Image (cartoon, rainbow over all chains, first blue to last red; front, side, top):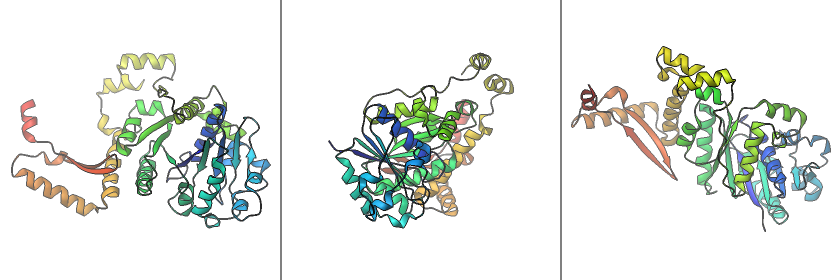
Length: 265
Length: 90
């Protein structure tokens, strides 16, 4: 058995890469898989905070690369799940401290001991992105239903294809069903039509994502969170299960649903 | 409650920002995917319309050019409405 290395990237910043990495990691680990998450955003580390593991960092990715510690020493075990680990980014260095070759070397060492290695890519298309994509077997592109985010996702898809990283998969994050229904937001179909890659998941806007990141407990651990449910579904789809996409047309009060009904669509 | 009021007002989907976003995205991706400048693109469009107008009557204002991705290929897709169609519908 050898791990699948999956890089989560977006081009544009702030669309939810780190949140997605943490939540997919939790979802896969909750299914019983052995998961290692790597924060490849050197200098702007965040995955530790979203996962709630920031207080336990001793060594980081750059320490491993520069030989100050063993790989195992930089791995923080998430005690809430059986087999979930984080390798944090360095906070005081920049992207040039790590090379694409380093990333391939590190993930190759991990492959035997894990089922999934998730890499949280930094924004942009420079060195940090190259580092994150170099070891990837599969690439997940995350976007929001906004012109700028979709445009950047399109650019990234082009770069991924040029690197021959196999067909990328798409997560559309922060969908607001109410706005879509009013015609004030790009629809999932609009985004999938233009990007023309396989849809892996649709994640609704959900306050629980923010409150869970406040607490350092990813929303996928919260069974009442819709976004958490969407990320758990994504985890199952990654393992090959055929999970139908969540219906996002619900929501709203009974009165709103009634008006929608007589509104006819 | 949007839908009910939309209906009372008569739907004006064209003005909705979701529609505007879709159109802007289409144009931006044409530029990004072809590396054509706005002038070059306009020229392509005009020359295409000129050529086709030699044979059929083109509804010039509603010609749409996009670049679509099909697996790993990019296709230049032009939607060219004809005036005869409209006349038939009355």
